[in-house]
Image (cartoon, rainbow, N blue to C red; front, side):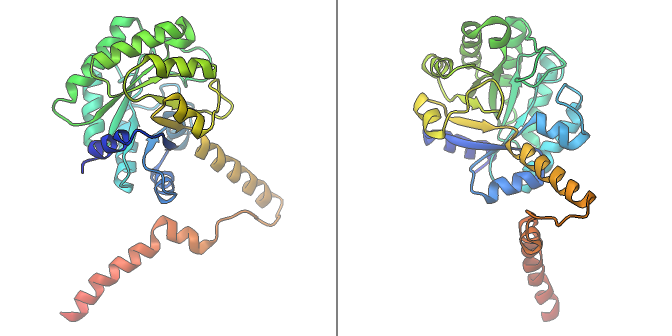
Length: 288
C-alpha cells in the first residue's frame, strides 16, 4: 500500500494510535523499531535538530521538505509532515502539499497561525482570519487531487478566540476536505471531551510534557474519542537530557554510564542488516 493508504487503514481500526514524533531519520527508525505504527515530523524538534534554532518559522520550505524526504526514506511506517502555515498564500499551500506527498509523507499538517508561526505551547501566537484559514485548507484539498496525501488541519484559535471559535474552524476544515482535525492546546480534560464530542472524523491530541494540555493516559485519550495521540517533544527532550549528562561526565572525566551498548548501537543504525544483505551480492560475485 502507499503511505496514505497505510495511514487510512490505521485510522479505520478506530483505536488510539500512539504517535511519538521524530526529528530525523535515526529517531524515526527507533520509533519504528519500538513497534509504533506511525510517526510525525515535529517542527519544533526538527528545527532544533537541523538548524539548532527554535520553531519560529526559521526553517524554510525546502529545508523542511528535505528533512521529511530523508525521514520517509528511512522507515516503512506512515510519516505525517509538519507543513506549518503552508509557507505563504494559498498557492504556496498547494505547492507545500504536493511537495510533502512527493517526499513520501502519508499526511501533511496545515495550520491557521500567522507567519512566522510559533510552537503551539509558547506565547505570542496569533491566527489568521477565518477566510484565509479556510482558503489554506481548500487549497490543500485541491492539491491532493493530483498527489494522494491526507490533510491534517490544525487550528490554534483556542488561544486568542476561545474553544468555540476553534471548534467552528475545525468543523469548516472538515467540510473543506480535511481528513484529520487538530485543535491545539485545549487546557482541560473537559475541553478535550468537548472537542471530540462536537467534531466529526479522526481527531488528534498533542501531548507536550509540561505544556498546556493535560497529559492524560492512553486509555483516557481513547475513551474521550481521540484517534491519534502525538508526543512531539518526548524523544528530543530525552535525547538532549542524555547528551548533556554524558557531556558533563566527559568534561570531568567521570565514567559514562547509561550509554547504549556498541553492538546494539550498530544493530539499530543498520550495520548488521547492511552486512547481511551485502553478503548476498558477494556470494553472487564468487559464483561468477
